[in-house]
Length: 634
Image 1 (cartoon, rainbow, N blue to C red):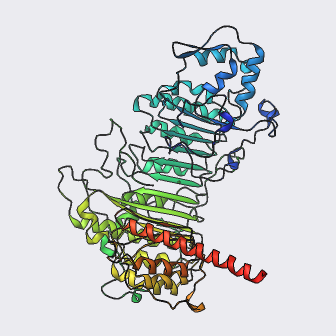
Image 2: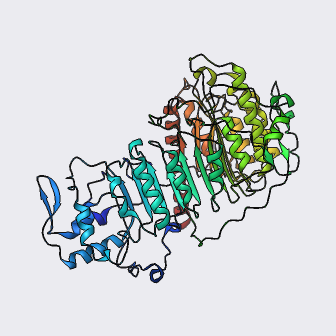
């Protein structure tokens, strides 16, 4: 639906739960919408009494026009532009105020449907001067929970309308550099008006100035902060400021293109922990060995206890608050080199003794963090992890960004890429040990800008990461993407899963650029993960399909509860008749399968056809059950 196509006649027909396809970034991934409902004391804040929910449904708008249409006949269309003319009765103004109280979500944007007429400049100012609540200091939107500011360089001038204490969630994307001062004015003023704001999302379009970013840190009750590839510079000082947010529970930081205005230090002070047992590398044959970063790598961990939490001024309690693909490059003219994160002068990593001398005595912030998603180069990942003092992280996503920072275009030495992968392996093992009792969801991702390096040996997932991930007994969700998995890892996957007790409900392994598993091993893997509802992996080929007698024996049938299978293999099979056998095999394993997801370039056409055959098997079983019931009744 276009932004300006809303009219009074079809307001009640709109489905505000479903996002418009034109604005995919406007909708938060959180499913807990009730947690953002305003809980303000009407008498305390001088607000009108809440409406009867049975008589007035909440509204989510993307235009001011539905609000102005409450003022007919004063709202007139002249030369295809809407104007307010003539007297506006008090009854119409009360009707408009009642309508505005129903608005809980608003999208402020410059985008306009070509079939809808614009609103004349000054119309909203005229309206504000006539509102009866102007003297009572009641906000224009007293019930507004969520505000989306999307590509609104011109519309941002209306920011005073959105100063309301009821606001709980703010999303900003696509604001140009010339409007950063206007945005900052809104954020600074909003911090005094909406002290209970709990969620801020910036990006993924446009860029946010450092000053606007710091203005977001004035909200003391902020529990969720998402910075999606919009911060042009990122350094240790900014990281420490974010870590001081006393109530922050969720941090999503995508800094893949950020430029470091000053070098990061290797902050790697960890509290005491139990030693991690060596991974069972004997499970893998061939040349597979865990990657261990030796003492000459320049990476060291200090065993020190965390300090007590800082004394933070008490604030009024806030209500409970509420999801990376490749983002478009951030159009920030002020950034000369939006690709380099490290300084142009690359120094060798410090020796362990140097790191100990420079590192602080313990972790310094993020005391309440439970969800952490970070995209960036290895130095950023190390520093973010090094600052987290929370011991209760349950959702972790680490995405290693490796780029060619050579300004002359020459490929960097392969040793740099190998070093980054080794450091990432060591860092991953440390966080898995740190939060081994609390982690329930882990995503390990890797992205490359250099195509040649993407297919190099350093793109293979280190065995140590793979093994330690499956030793996490608390995990319910595990996703690995962007890495290649060699044959040794695939061959040892079945033994590794069987050896470790699994609570996994979601297991997503790479499909592209990997050897994959055989259809025969598919059964043994899912048998070792009885709670799986979604499984993704690469398949070697569509040959060597296990054969069962007709009808299949009871021992051949597997009543697994898998609902989603995401698979692919390099090339189609020459004999289409074999697809029938594949479908029958999958139906014997997964009788409750709902969908098969395919992947471009991985034989998606044959897999789509296999899914159609699986559905026919399911329908046939239902028909046979109905026939059996009919025979019993007769």
